[in-house]
Image 1 (cartoon, rainbow, N blue to C red):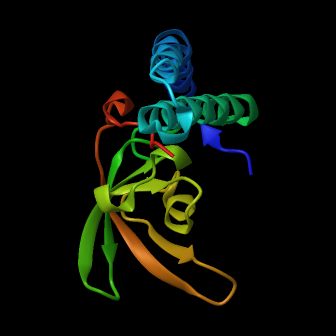
Image 2 (cartoon, helix red, strand yellow; image 1 turned 180 degrees about the horizontal axis):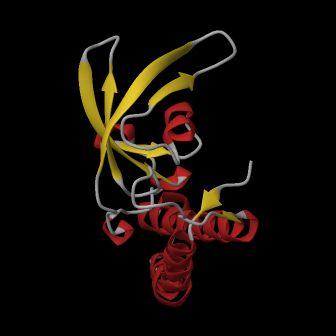
Length: 167
């Protein structure tokens, strides 16, 4: 599956790739060399730890490069009165008689515990581009769904304050 990302997401990933390649990689290579020079590798925990950390860095670089290469760019378009990405939206759940506030974000920023709902989630798909006062049916699958009502839509939040999830 191709991740739907904003240009800002991609810029952050490219910055992390550059930092890992230019700063972290040389440090980790040097740590492996120093640990190797300590002698017998069969009992050298420092060597294996340094090697593991170097390999984790390389895996992260490959992961980020693949995400950037395969990403689908999403534009955050919509009117001031519509639910768009990075705008707080207050949603009323009539079945539970509860109101919660969410922000719709790209998949890699999704974190339901912090109220960040992915644009690919059933709730995110249902809310996107709706207006305050709209009643929306959230379809979970072919046989399950629920209704919500959009109470209010806030001002757009600067997405630079969110951190891209570390996998």
